[in-house]
Length: 305
Image (cartoon, rainbow, N blue to C red; front, side):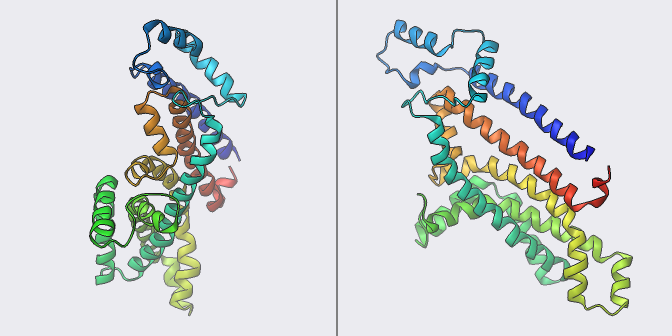
């Protein structure tokens, strides 16, 4: 278990460094945080008083330790814009992000893995070429462009689906598909590659010579051995989905964590921007840690180290 312990320590170090980087990046990005709470007509004296109350006049390293101390004690703070509790914002908007992220995550593997398997067993056929062409397109088209195209086609032209909103099933379809597009394409290629590597192995020819049916060879033996890179890919897809969710939520008007973060940055709402940035960082790092955990579970040799 030394492998898992070392990866866990590495994750904690990355989180500590990321917390410093996020805090300094937001505080040193410019702009006046008092504009999030005070009207444009407020005097400089009023703004200076608010800065003193918020601790913005303290050295930035002191602000960091003060903020992290409050955060670790469970005090998430309040929004500067409307004084709303950040803890309530996490519950409300976090639920929406989980719904969208989970839908995209399921699409990535429920669509990507079967298509990759089909492409591998039908290699060099029309089906294989068609699937691989779609996967190339899925990786080549940027998410924001795919989102705009899908809104134009399915919402404006065909009028099959709404262009924005939350949180009915029909409103989830387009953002979930767009968010899952690149991950699905990568999963198709990874699954096909892993399957072909095993299909060309000597032990597969031995199983076939022993009289096992092709479906049993592929379904029970080849696919099981191809699972290691696919499982490793699963954790990495969490980070990818978290990153792209910022764009997708804004374009489709989905009120999740990404949309809240973008609005907080634009309004110079420091407490909200800092906390939700850290949440997204934690999710990305946790996704990579889960990938390591999945790889450990799928590879028995690592469990002996």
